Length: 211
Length: 211
Image (cartoon, rainbow over all chains, first blue to last red; front, side, top):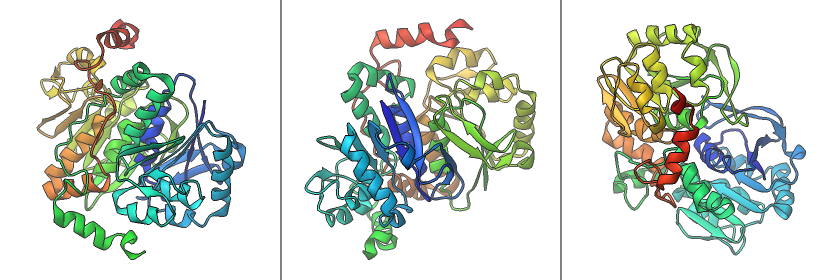
């Protein structure tokens, strides 16, 4: 199964690497990082670059499409080359997936209309504007569309999908190999759990608050 | 604070990207990916490459050293250039850290002798051969040495260290921003929790079993 992970300027690295490290361990995985042009693509902090090994045009029919998010996604929502590629790839994909605000790109391409979906907690209302039903769940499976919440949730999404594709035991093996037995030192990973003033600060300062 | 994340051929991507996405969000973080030579460095699957923006020699005194693991770490255990760099950088570092089998590199450099430390669950015995006391905990802090267990544990390590450096509230903000509210679809992330036959298969087929 060919897995295309889309890169664009100012993506969030963990959004892409969580699914890479899980889905990429499917028995017959052929993972390929794709972008409009080949070469290094910089993340949101500017400190990390992942190489796009193939152009979008060179990978027209992946079995799994993975779209990460990140602040750079805003600019991509008007990138017709990328949106066209998403629509075309989606016609033949077995699974079309996203992490974080990557779901806004799927939505902008018209792929989530009337579907249950999720996104980074700051972007849930924005997702609704594109006709998706935003659930706020961590991983949402609606038909072949699998969307995950913010950044780190791509690991949970990847394991969920590995289980669906290759069975529970293979997913458990991937979880064991990546030692995914999370023990966060704090319990502030969602707006329901984090201190209210932190949530408020993010909402006030977020670009999503302005839309 | 300058954060140097070390890359080498066949590293495990999530080992590096977990700390990048957490430590890299310290208020004054200057994260830099380093390797013997600049340019793209391929991960263990071959499908992902992160760019090393600076050579080891160009970054002699980082405040935080981060050493990921991965199957490529075996070859690096005899790479005197890297081991020398680790010893030198450690002389002035505020924190010296590792994820997964990255701790074997710290150990091979002689930095963990007599210290409590951890590693990927398959490598714990191996770690002991270098004079470290391997604990099997997910994140171990012994003085300025912070080691994490396999692959995904670098996220927990990063958040722990963000809390120590910048305070609990900043760490909680990073956790909220990365929406790190893990909900693994299985509970097989450690050898204590995974089906026994899977653990046995990994032990039998692991390179560590042959040492």
